[in-house]
Length: 452
Image (cartoon, rainbow, N blue to C red; front, top):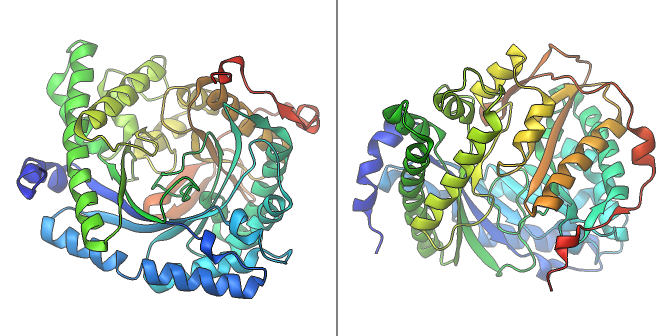
């Protein structure tokens, strides 16, 4: 039985090593809000979210105060909006985003995710309408996050959707250019998206989920970094065991908070996502963990191997601690949100190609990477296709969150503040991928998808 005594050993982690509960996320089905009348559907969406999430923020704050555990964000994820809005007789889906934003502000949460479409095998009319509305939706809202799943191991890669998303990302950057293209920080393109991810911007409440559920995301790069300082020069099996034991302790804390939130909100407990999600704060960096293993700078030769060890050991420790580990659990490598990654990118050691190689063994993909504002849409689509191929072939979740920086070139910086941090503008290959993207169609699923 979990109890408060089990987290006493984590006090030092919390006080000195940046350990926190990164998010308590309420997943909520909005399928009951479908209505032919779009205004009535939006009213239903607002009413249901505000009714179910009314106590979410206060409950998180109460747990934070009583247990002494920082809970950084309280969030909501909802059914992919293309599925809900598709029932309404309208071509304009932006009001659905506005309803989500209004509900999130009423509830006091940090973000709401689920302005999403699942198009891995093809696009319905509703999917396409939602996707084309994303730039305006993200420009006119503050708290709404959007995601599109363009591929899967079972379905292959929808290259028509990939081509469209390159243009949508460019349009989103332009629509929010007065904020350095901030809208793109709230837009993720997935392959093999999961239904129970509590982390933004890619969270949505899958159709296989219950009516409502509590998912918790835990983060602790600083704790792992500190633990590895005690095993300097030791063999890698010792390093892996140290990471695993540390991940175990972090996950137990997350499960305690998740179960407590579940009880107080009378909502089923879903999963604990143990993801080493960094922040711009010094001492809270995944890059510094890799350097602690013996790399002079993150991005040099050996980085991919170090990240593979870290990701695997984190997952093993989490599974030891809880039978409900889910989401994306592992190590994130968002450039703008990791002070070590930022330093390595500015030094030129960490480049886009190396980051792509690292995504083969980490939890997500090319995340929070600023590229020149004049990068062609086809180049962005090609980067998405490469990343989706890694996910499809390796049966893992991959994602792309690129930030085309309006008016900026390599060497510039975009500033987003808070957990989103700042990002140096990184170069992309100048050679064109336009003819490749123009082919369209679908890249077939790999042979090993035939497991039935």
